[in-house]
Length: 233
Image (tube, rainbow, N blue to C red; front, side):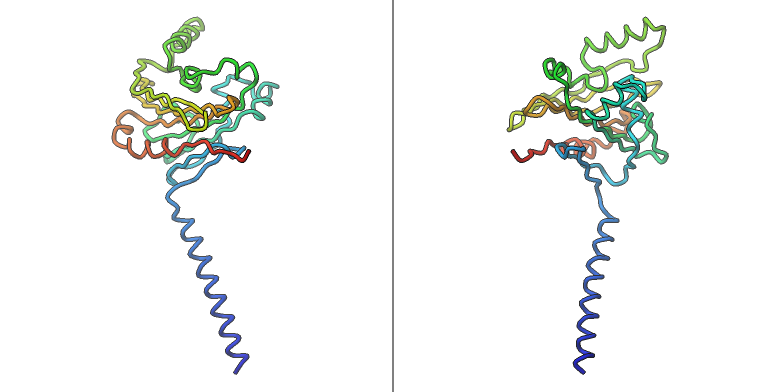
């Protein structure tokens, strides 16, 4: 009788543990968001779990212009972290600049000494795409000299909000439109310079202007989740 009761007690305990673990798995499977941290664990944000994570390496190379086998590209791998998420049915890196579905790209750069000396709010505004008038003019002129038509046209600045954080970090959030092909795309970018002046963290959200207008609350939720984490010491 004692053995039977002992066996039943063990069986109940096992069933309880199994139920808890199963519930945990189910909860994970139904997670509303994907939570993201950079390689050093200093930057955090979340995206809806309906977004698919994709390899951002090609985006980094496109934005930098580096050859993948160059020494510069190898150095960038040590200094730069990035990630990308696409909600399109068939995710692709070229959706950074255009598709009917939203796209999220984030990057964290450890700055070199020369970069530390010149980083500013305008540097952060222009970190991924040309936003300031000076950089937009330089972008257009460079392509015209190369005999190429600009991909980005008819810039419209929607909002521009400097950000001051309590620990001395600072940043800026800008929202702007570009006509790409025959579609107006809206970009929402938040960029932070950490309190040491040594790291820039950027989050860029893109969707068509019509999509952005309908889903602005959802995209604000993503942007507002973008935080710098205060590390010990």
